[in-house]
Image 1 (cartoon, rainbow, N blue to C red):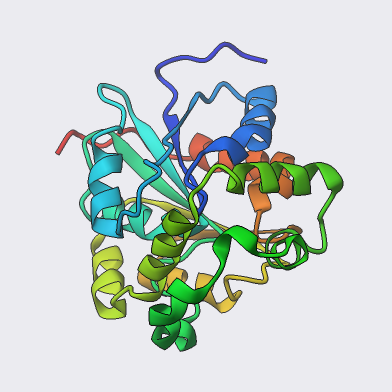
Image 2: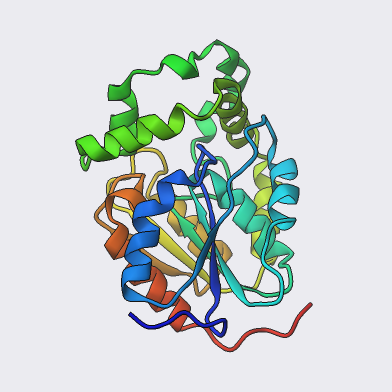
Length: 246
């Protein structure tokens, strides 16, 4: 493996709804095994913050003085879209993984007011496995998921899901379309949470978006880390020279 160099863009990882960044370990190991790309994972505060507050939280923690690419997983897609719409100095591209820039299940929006009745701390493991990992669930992946979710207060998970359901489509789509940075979309062929057609909307809003389909469930980076690492490394290697600072 080659030695990392600051000439290579840093890959900033924004986590899914758990917000812990603990579930990036498999992908990070796969990436480091074959590339010289450094990573920086940003874990969110274990507090019930909306997207606006989380965007401010992320912007304060982005790297300074070197180019970087943002990878936004699942829940973090709207944060990646906001960064692309108003990119900080050094940001060169955006990668969306099984993610979205609008509520991916708009039919469920009216139900957001009922989330207070959902027992997030007692959701059955079978339901989570089916939604996030099937048909690629393994005992080790299941244990990693359960251990990670156990670290997140149910009130935080509830607020993050409410934030997804409450997204104003016209605002998020307009914001994302304003951006000009290159985009890679990693789509899982067996994603049971984000509909496949969601990627087509990304392609319409950001012409030139590179779409890579991978045999994986919604937790793509965890179930297929090597395939994801190959796609991400190829995308970053193909980026043009860094843009001038804003």
